Image (cartoon, rainbow, N blue to C red; front, side, top):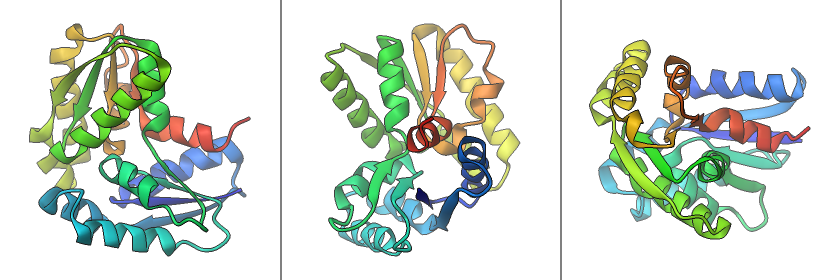
Length: 213
C-alpha cells in the first residue's frame, strides 16, 4: 500500500516516516506533503472559510495517483479533509480518529490538551461522535496549552513540549485519560509517562491503523 501524509508542519515528516518504517519496513511507499499555510489560514480565518476549504481540497487532489490513502496529520483540518475527499481518489482519514476511539474506550472523563483553539471544535466534535457510536457517556475537560504555541512557532520544540507537559500535570487529577489533540504534542507523552492515567497521541495509532498486522 502507498500512503500519503498531508502535514502543516515540516517536523511531522520525520515523525511519521519513522512510524511507517517501524510498521511496514523501509520499502513502504509513502509521500509527504507539507503546507504550513493551511493551518495558519485556518487559525486566522476559521475552518469553514471557503478559501481554506478550497486550498485543502486542492492539496488532497495533488497527491500521486499511486497513493491509496491520505492521512491528514493536522487535527484542525482532519474532519474537513474527510468531507472534502475526492470521490474518485484515495481514502482520506484524519489522524486523530484512532486516538479518539482509544480515549472513549479508556475512560469517562477525557482531558483534551490543545495548544491552538482552532483544534478544539474538530477534536471535541469527533469525541462526541465516537462516544455516540460506542454508546458511551463522556465528559470533556479542556486543557488549554495555548500559551505554549508561540514556542512551537518559534522552533523551540523542547520548551514547547515542556510547557504543554507542565500544564497537563496540573490538570491530570481531574480526568481518567488524556489525549494530546495535536500531532505536535506527541512527544509530551514521554514527559508525563509517570502519570497513573493513559495518555494518547495520534501519530502512532494512526499509522498502526493504516498498516495493520
